[in-house]
Image (cartoon, rainbow, N blue to C red; front, side, top):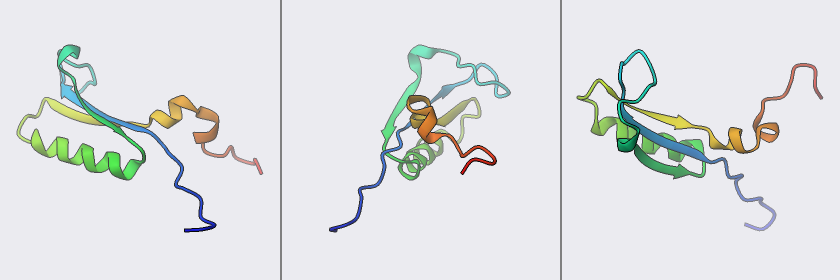
Length: 86
């Protein structure tokens, strides 16, 4: 539509694998990590995360995560406003 700006791209990575211990985030074997993909916004990443987690629901040691890549790539833009800042 004329006059509308495209949605800002906020990259998110979805990945997972088998953990050494369900109380930690240390993976059993980095070679077998499941890199689900990189997504342009949180909503799409969440949908991919949910689908991957559902596939492994019976395996308690396997967990999937969403990483906010946009916060790592551009921390100033993605950071929440500081208290008292205008």
